[in-house]
View 1 (cartoon, one colour):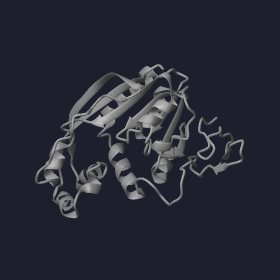
View 2 (tube, one colour):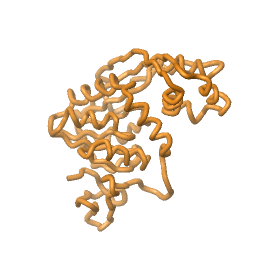
View 3 (cartoon, rainbow, N blue to C red):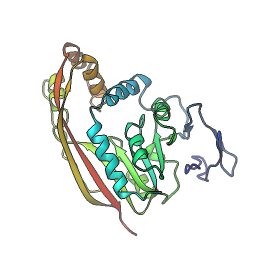
View 4 (cartoon, helix red, strand yellow):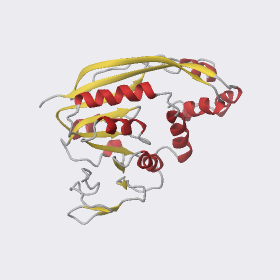
Amino acid sequence: MTKFICPICKEALSGEKSLVCPNRHCFDRAKGGYVNLLSGKGGNHGDPKDMVLARKSFLDKGFYEPLREDIAATVASVTPNDGAVLDCGCGECYYTHRIAELLPEAHIMGIDVSKDAVNYGCKRSKALDLAVASVYAMPVTDLSVDTAVSIFAPCALEEFVRVLKPEGHLVMAIGGENHLWSLKKAVYDTPYKNETADYELQGLEFVGKKELKYAIELSSAEDIKNLFSMTPYYHKTSREDIAKLDTLTCLTTEIEFEILIYKKVSA
């Protein structure tokens, strides 16, 4: 049974092939199994299919597997066995799937603004409850989530606080100061390191963090370009600088992540 709510009237949704609220707003499940609960008009949102496929290809080769294992273990450690987990910006569910494997009795939900990403998430696992939706307007009931997960996604703080149960947790992954430093040096004449995070989040208590540092060896131009297309720098970089990657066939670069754990402050 889904825990999603109607994005129009905020009432509970129920059903199988179609989700319907008491006010008769109806949302059909796509063939893959997800439901589109994105409010507002317009066409496709979020990452386009080519970027989703590039990220999926890169992640499926295991370069970020240590991060996936640490995130899943962290989420499992703070979530009741039968609890509710919401991956806020789940993409194609590389991390969400592993969380579900460690918490087989839990209700694992995921939302992402990209329909293409969510569609691939459904293909990765049928155990997930997935919807196309924005993290800034989560179609989820107040105080219903035991653990929210945010992996390189926008920090929708007000929504995190709204959906989390009292004493619920937020597990967030961000890039460290030297993350992908050698890759950035290959692209930019004057690269810069990532800004140091401010761990203060209003309404949430900072519990602690885990740092993960290692290096990866990329042995093809495809892997190098796929990695760069996953970064927030991709849309801000000139074609001339991106073209520098065409000359690279191998690259070793730094990987540096921080996994941050927060707990909802009791009212």
